[in-house]
Length: 137
Image 1 (spheres, helix red, strand yellow):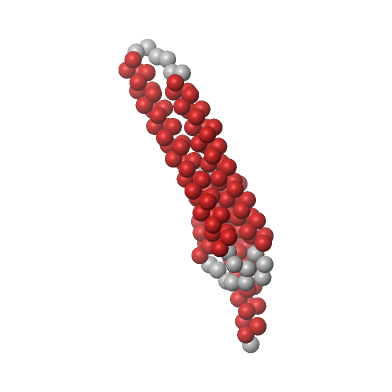
Image 2 (cartoon, rainbow, N blue to C red):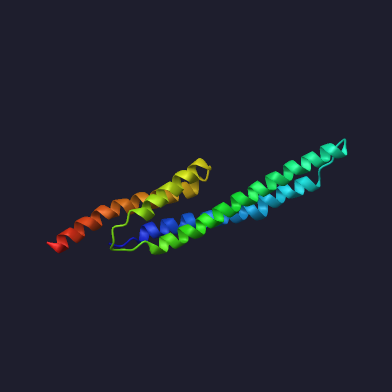
């Protein structure tokens, strides 16, 4: 049984994760860093403390972006490993897990794509098992 539709949905989700991760790193994090450069204040101590907070926000957003890029690459690799005429459980469960994590992190596009790919893949597992059992008997 062909798994092309699930693969397309998973590739869309993985691409979205990579794009949003790169946007977080190169657009949002650099904007945060620029805000830290433009800080003005009453005393040197308040400027330094504000810059420390900005640096921490910058490091958090870069780390968050790298997390999304790495997850996108992992999901690309796992999508390639999804085989057509085999019943597979681990990869679809991983997709559902990534979808739930994406929803928690407010990434609705990635969440919808991965939950959809995981559920469709698990549903096709039943059909693949029925077809392989009929061919054996």
